[in-house]
Amino acid sequence: MGLKGFVEGGIASIVAGASTHPLDLIKVRMQLHGESHVVPNPSLQVCRPALAVGSVTGNISISQISQPTRVGPISMGVRIVQSEGMAALFSGVSATILRQTLYSTTRMGLYDILKTKWTDREKGDLPLMRKITAGLIAGAVGAAVGNPADVAMVRMQADGRLPIDQRRNYKSVVDALGQMTKQEGIGSLWRGSGLTVNRAMIVTASQLATYDQVKEMILKKGAMGDGIGTHVTASFAAGFVAAVASNPIDVIKTRVMNMKVEPGEAPPYKGAMDCALKTVRAEGPMALYKGFIPTISRQGPFTVVLFVTLEQVRKLLKEF
Image 1: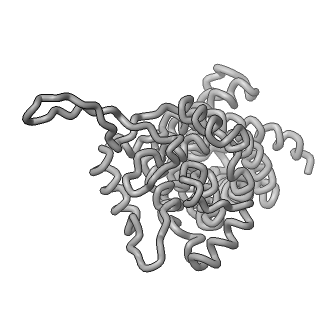
Image 2 (image 1 turned 180 degrees about the vertical axis):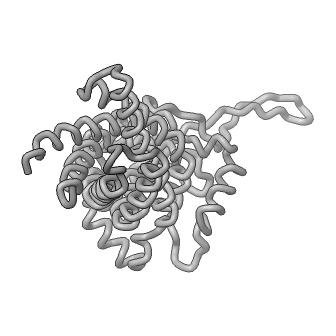
């Protein structure tokens, strides 16, 4: 396949990423919701009312406690539109396009090369473990290449949840990368890169291997032909497996990438493990599955658009 695999994967990834960007933004906001060291935008913050009972008089009063209520993807989306406008749902879309161009193009193309190389020539099949290994390698390389765009995307998506005086106000992904380099050093572009690599390995291995495996099973059993029905079914299975496997590390990655490090002050998180422990202590173990509904809501459509587009692009470029 060579270069063609990169081109096909890149086109499909950019289409899928841009079309599902609002769902990804909602996921990021939900994953950041409840961070104790962040003072969120008051219009997006909802506090639980608490009863306070006086020890002497027995008077009961209602006060506001700082613990935010749980929010669903629909209510989060509505709040974003109400407080920031409809265009806010596409905050950071330029970073998404750059991320897909770097990260997904690399992982899709490399996976295709490894899959072709490792396929048994006589039997014409590739064992599941080899597919998973190819996905792990492709995901790691792709994530390392695309991490700067990933950091910029997370920050641009999260900016609107902060009070106006605390926002970074990046104008575009180029502006974001430029400001990060000037203010925080070149190393900030690879903040959370270990998490990005780990997540990408899990997502790529589970997503691409599951798609190929389910598609092969459907075709072998003759349940459906090699058409859009098979592609959609295999895509949904791949999206679900990828979402379940990657959500915890995705939450930690989002928080580490988004944290503000003030000059002379200790960072909110010392690393991935510190972030995980603080998140679980403050918000409970299920906090690692924050944003799961929008994650699966985004992974499903993203994966369907990705693979359906990929199959169509392959047909178009078949003669090249």
